[in-house]
Image (cartoon, rainbow, N blue to C red; front, top):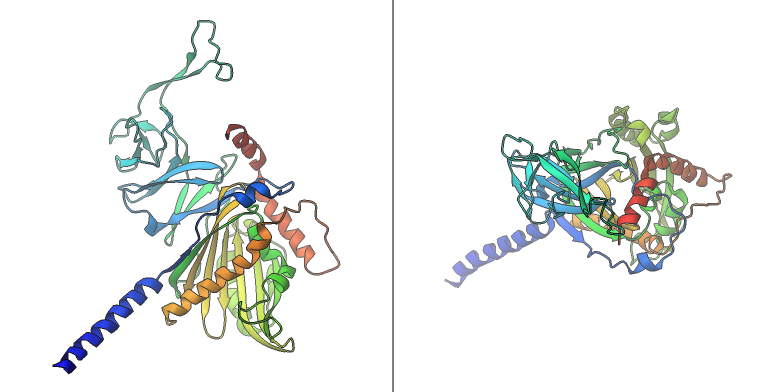
Length: 438
């Protein structure tokens, strides 16, 4: 009888343990609590470029927004309400209702398939056109717009009116362009309301499995994070350590790197890898990404070879990284080793000036155990954290001294030239925000 019980209980315990293991590590999430802005307010940042460059930004993962769900976000100086209509399409609009200023993203509800209803007085706005509408037919509401005659001094006009009529007719709120691609929702933000110059690029990772994501907050200028990829020399100092438990005199990483904009002449020749296997692997990626001619001017490419150095004498090739920086806030990294292949997707969300939310999403070979993919995700996060102590406490070096005789600084300077194209109109946009914030 006891043996029979053991035969039943033991398998049940194993099944239960595997269930909890699967639930924990199948999609492993490492989420840091949002930092208090102590460092941001105390640290002098210097004379920086604008804080909110133009481009495509990650809004959310598709699975995070169910049909009828409404959310709000502060992103790149904008307050945005976004939702998935009952037509299954994702919409994003300016968060504040023009009637009485309520936040549509907090308590708002989906109505008329593509509309969002204000929680304060029930005004409905179409996510496609931005129009305030009355019914499912999307017939526009006709309203009268009033404003204070002089809100600074609160003086009446010549008629003795403190509120005066400005116009009458249809009313709209701002809508934002959305793209939903392979389980990710992107939003286009431009300080001059220009149309997209390029479309988000679909990653080449169908053979890999989504395994996890880390979410972190860093205090620095938005440019500091993507600029890291073009800063060749810092890898030898910040990213030399293999782990916290292994001293660098025993084993350390040694890095060799190339970086350049994708539209430069002789790109293939200059970025060609000496090893045939890696050269063929990278060429497939180049052909995939560079096929989008509209994207080329807005994409920077990096190739990074990582070797393990034992006692600073013996070298073993370990990792081959090919990265694509697309626009100001999206980086896709392909990592090839002899044991596995990894795809990291890095995304930046500027919460406010000098405060960035960083996502690191991991795809990896399906044959690897879940605990190992969780460990690899932690390893990728560790590389970011290695930079954080520098980012949190540095100024932005707007006036920089470059060693143009070396191989590293010319790459960094060229990268800054490339990235500067995303700031069109950003300074004027930011100045308007500063005048409105308390």
